[in-house]
Length: 337
Image (cartoon, rainbow, N blue to C red; front, side, top):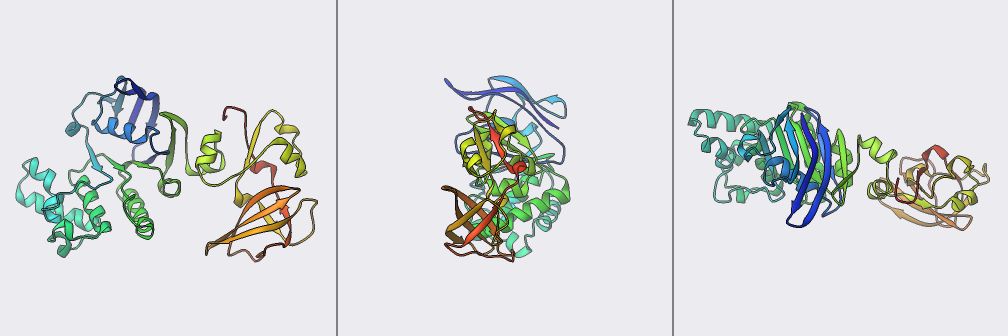
């Protein structure tokens, strides 16, 4: 549905995005993920029409929209700051775009009620000034306003970053449920790895204006194609070939690589002495639903993630058997791939 073809974006002499090509499918929740300054918001702004690209083309449904005005791109937008009109009521904010289009009052009222029901806003909230709403309610108003004109595509730039952690988790689920229920094509920008993994059908990981990897959450996390993606997405134990040899792993197939990573949840622990790979618990961090253990194995530290549902729990100085599967090792050559 959306296609970027060799897109280049410059700010004066600064090359923000050198050469970007990717496709987004219709009805897909597609996330642009990366650290600050990596080019994800720049890419979103180019798609929405706020930035002119210096080379390449952007297509929607096969039509070139590279130089189309913002209002002709068929997109709804939700910004980090929500960009609501503080002196207007919720109802007026949601219907603002329709009013600008000079739609009749009956249609606007009907559409506002319809949209309010979709995003769980009550009649009482509709008649309140938006400045009197909570952060979560304002976020719903921003989404409602963005979809009032029935856009094909909804773009969202860090829409939850100003909310507290508990509310962010609640609204993540609401956004995902809403997107799936109505089949809207969603382009979502975030620097939050957990948010991206939970929400997305596919994720595009950006680094310094370049795409490191595009894939499903499972592919991005469990089969990271580059060292940058591996380090950016979640925690990982980092090792050299010599370290793996000390851990009694068969490294013959890995000798062409330079760096190796193992996700903490792949490091399994047991109190049974049934393996040559024995270690000692040197620290324990309890987080409620899970616990992080640091294990010392043959002078090498390992981080192990254990769910609280596990039958076995461990204390500092406990001797443990460490179980590793060679298939869980993510290997990379010098230079990141």
